[in-house]
Amino acid sequence: MDEIKSVAIVGGTHGNEFSGIYLLRQWEQQPQRIQRQSFSTSTLFANPPSYEANKRYLDSDLNRQFSLADLDNIELANYEQSRAKAINAFLGPKGNAKTDLIIDLHNTTSNMGPSLILLQSDDFNKKMGAYVMQNMPEAVIVYEDQCPVEEQLFLCSITQQGVIVEIGPQPQSVLRQDVLDQMEKMTLLILDFIDAYNSNTLPALNNYSAYRYKETLSLPTNEQGERIGMVHQHVQDNDFVALKSGDPIFKLFSGEEIYWHGEYEAYPHFINEAAYYDNNLAMSMAEKFTVVL
Ligand SMILES: [Zn+2]
Image 1 (cartoon, protein in one colour):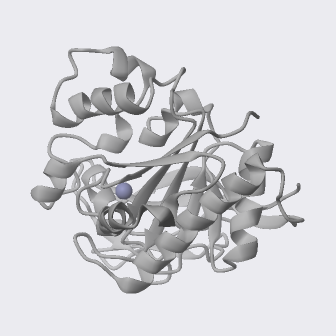
Image 2 (spheres, helix red, strand yellow):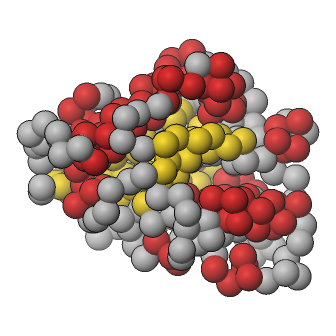
Image 3 (tube, rainbow, N blue to C red):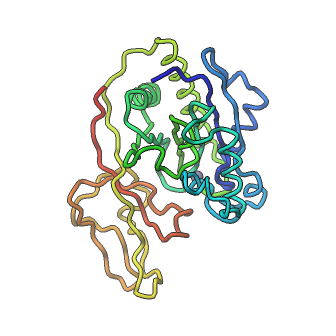
């Protein structure tokens, strides 16, 4: 891969995820914290009106508007659909972007700790994961590389390289110091990694354990689509703790328990994420594997 010459740090893609928004303000006051020798760093507040409204979004989820087809479709013109086109023009365009790498900052209400979501498992991303793990052992590396980057809907898929920093647990529209500190630490480590990668000064990196996205589970519903149960307390807050076949995952309001019967050892995450109730999603499932460098 070529050298990374320009990095954009994006915050406030979701208006009620406060850590990134407040970090952007701090970095605007002290830009030297995010500047590195071998590339330029810019910042972008992606969705200010949704922050003003204290909501995740005004009309639709901004972080799902970046398919090539939707970016090209001028009939998609609600606030976030229009904003996505403006951001794509500013940082992209997707497929031929003037920016080399986007770091998109998010919070989750789930107990995921400091998670780094990587969209591809090329040498660059594998090494980035290793570098972050070695300097931040509490970090969790999640690969969402189930499709090519250009098919992803995320904002950070505008650029050839893009990552999501996803830190929780933090309630919506709240600032937690531990979460903010972890977000800054992980973001600065990514910048340090890029700088070392560019200048061929990476330290020796070790193989590490990571997670690979498999599937998303929905909350139980009846034929009318009404919710009839909730996430079981056995999994609540146990993000990245292995589930075995037969473990309870949902408790129905009738009292009945629903069990996990997967064909693999599943590592649930985004468990009971508040923002996913819109779509009735309960949790994502991953498999654990070793990243070999
Ligand atoms: Zn988010």
